[in-house]
Length: 424
Image (cartoon, rainbow, N blue to C red; front, side, top):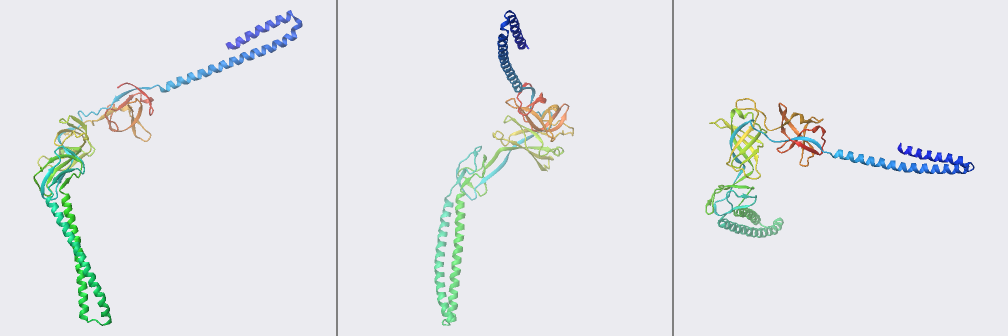
């Protein structure tokens, strides 16, 4: 509007000058009128073009500014409040005293009688599968292999002799058969030739059988010699060394015991009145003071035979032990969260709880909560719900210690949204 007013003002000034000039010099009116109109058209056209360019540039700058403003608004993090997940078990479940056990124990022994020449491992040492553990004096076994080799060699010689005898008997038999068929050989001579051929064939079969027997005996002797080297059949830790160098090892007598403690089991005795409420997936918490460790238990193994004196059942809780800090024999406190106390009354479920209102539901019926990762980006975390307690709900599965769950501001989140955590 201001540009249009300026143009009109200039145009009016030129028009006034034109009228005055024509009045003063009338005879130039036609020439000057043509000149004036041409000048006015060019002037106004040029001014309007400049105004249009300026207006276009202004609009472009305004659009760029708006775009940047919109982009800045999109990248602005969403302000949320979070609550850090912490597994709480106080006041929930029953606590029992148990003992740590290895998950597997393998007793390794020699297969024959002999004197142990060397012991190459010690108690507490980690050994791998295929590792040499001990050696027995191989003198007797070496002599046995030598004798077996000699017997096998003799058996092969006997086979060669038997083959030669059979070949001679077969050749004589074939020649005599021609005479017998022509009626030129007495019957008694023919029977004698048949008998010799049968004897030669029997001797060959016997010699071949002796070779097979001698070969089998030699294999056994070699296996016995190889068994003088005690090899670890599995990987694990040497639990107990029961034979030392210089002692005589008996067949099937355990020389060492290899323990698998990558996963350990904590054995506790549970009264018969409480065992019914314990299942394979019962939640548990294990505390071992000697190792200064507390960790959640895994799968529960429930015994079915009761102790005749105490009327208790053995329960074993599997516990991960990758650092090997939990050792067999350590005392442990095990809390089992069954939902019932020993007097039959209910207890809280224990474990992870979150506010009820921060749990969302998908179209397929599954539930999730929003969690914030280390980069402060929001992600959906699928959870399995347990019972509710006042304004909170127990999470059976899906959340672990340390996760940050969004409890306020989750309404504005989408997958991967950048967040600004205001508090917890």
